Image (cartoon, rainbow, N blue to C red):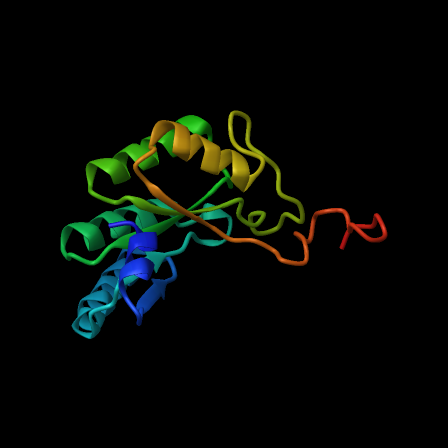
Length: 164
């Protein structure tokens, strides 16, 4: 079920957002917490990416496990950081094959130690490109995005032409 359908069908929504595990041990602890929180009947859960996508494999495995072992819709965050289009395609295919059909598409922050976002060769520079890619290759997926009402910190200020 797409998250948009949940918001249309329910007056009250409860969701939990999980930060990505940094190790196998923390992944097990996080899944145990998920199991405990299921008794509150959340409408959906989401799992974020680590800073710079550093924990992505554990995140993907956890997302698949949560979806396969519950009837709770799972939203997986997906960023442009450090991934080629082919790698993103493989992730989305894995999700599709495992019944995950909600993605939070983000550009993502620069990896630790970097001050600027740098697109990897064959990757995406903007979340809008990621969204277009998902819509083209996986049109059945629900896609959420995040925005900056005042403008992204890296965008030229519409009033005075400066950045930041």
